[in-house]
Image (cartoon, rainbow, N blue to C red; front, side, top):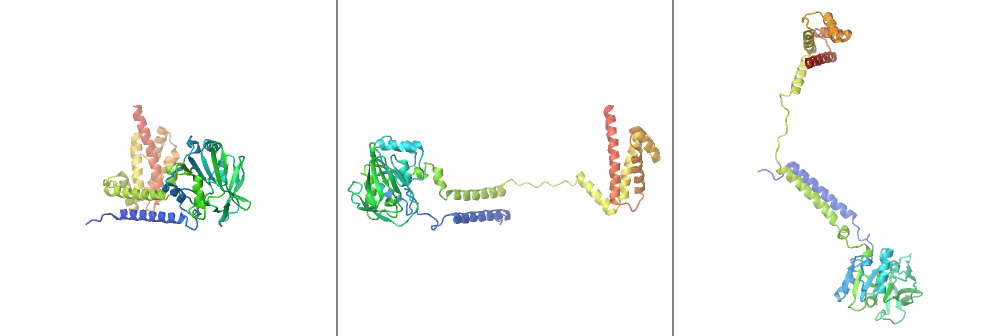
Length: 393
């Protein structure tokens, strides 16, 4: 019973399997280990320690109309009342048009929860600076005065807070520690801005600490509020391709593609039309010449080869000149010089040497080859004159 795959197909499949294993090993080697990963950032997609996926899912479970915002701020709703925009430590300061759109959102009645120094650059009438020394140790911040934002949350914890610099609007300090502010609020037009010095009150790892959850829900407001959690400034700008680029799917697609090409190649070789390889005909003139040359070489018949070429050329030359075939060599050369204008000395030398070579038993092969080449050249010149004469006729 014949095997399902022949030897070449098996080698090809084994090679494809080896390449796939190497790709898997490379993927494992390049993937960051848990020790190399950061603690995350406050994204609603992130389940890491400093991520905010738990806070976002909690809002949805509690009945809030929470959604991820992956579009430009220029597309924020025009009617911004009862809408909260969460800017949790954005990566960029945004363009002038984007900052103008956020300002318009606040002026028409929207609320912005701005977290970190980068968020202060996006919202209107605020400025803050990032703290250069990052300390993972949480610090307790106490409420500075009674407020709807501090209800049921007399204390909160913050990790590595930024520093609030100033605001052109009258602002109200919500939490503080010594001379540092942890959160402030101020109004702009019909809306308001709540600035946090750190995202840790809503982070996955610390949202349950002390009054962090209560403070977070107080800032979001009533359950009738629509909550837009910004992911645009985290790089998720509504592109499905950019999302999948961060997953192992490109590597998996590459491996599947290699396996598909391997299967396609083996299938086409196995079931394709069978063709007999072209073989060279034994009647080929080149094979005859090679065989004849081998015979002359094995028999050491160099004089015979020169004799054949010489006799053929002399017969053709005498016929062309119209002289007897037994004419002496000097007379034959003078007639060729008179008729064709060939130099007499080289022609006479070639023919004389050829006559001597025919009778020499010690003729070297290279000398014989040189004489045959010269005789062939004279024959070609004679044939060309014959063809020219026929065309004139």
